[in-house]
Structure formats: structure tokens, C-alpha cells
Amino acid sequence: MDLPKNKRIDVALQYLYGVGETRAKSVLEKLSGSVKPDTRVKDLTEEQVVLINNLLTKDFKVEGDLRREQQANISRLTEIGSYRGHRHRRSLPARGQRTKTNARTRRGRRKTVGVGKSASPTGKA
Image (cartoon, rainbow, N blue to C red; front, top):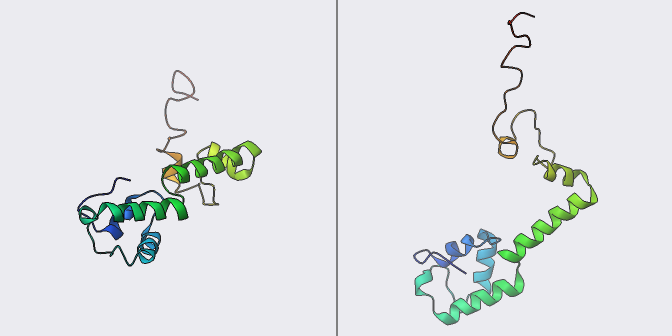
């Protein structure tokens, strides 16, 4: 669990994969007696770090476990041949977004089609 040293603990927890603002706040609420949200990571005692770590690993899936589970879900969709699995395999949006325009993040750089060399060597049709 590598957290930035100079950040407040409520912000630093969000650097973990699978922990967002809401989950970070809920973790700190459960530990309200021992860890205050405005405490800096460098000021945490070893005991507080162990408490946070135990709570995160016991109650939530974070980091490697969450990544493995998501990858297993995607591979299951691909293996059973579902529509979403096909979209993942072809690196296209899987949740119904349009692809005629937009979707550049998934589809990559534009590939120009139809502009280039002419069909005949002399340039005449």
C-alpha cells in the first residue's frame, strides 16, 4: 500500500485502485475513533496504518484482487460469445455508445479511407 506521504489520508486513499471519494470517506468513518480525515499520511502511526489496511482488505476488493476479478469477467464474456464480449475483443465501446463519430479512445487514431493513389497507373479512369 503505497500512498503519497504529504497528502491527507482521505485524499491519499483514493490513490488505491478501487477506492474513490465515497469509499475513502466510509473507511475513515468506520475508523473515526482512531483516524481523523485531516491527518497526513506521514503522521499516521503504524497501528493506524494496520487498521486501515485490515479494513480495506477485509471489507472491499481493491488493487490486484479487483483487477483480476474485472479481467475474469471480461474473459468470461468473451468466451461465451456474448455481444459485450465481441465488443471487448474488437476494442469497441461495449455499452451502446455510437461509433460513427466519437469513440476515438477505444478505436484509436483516425484511418483515412478512400484518399490515396488512384486505381490506374496513368491517373485516368
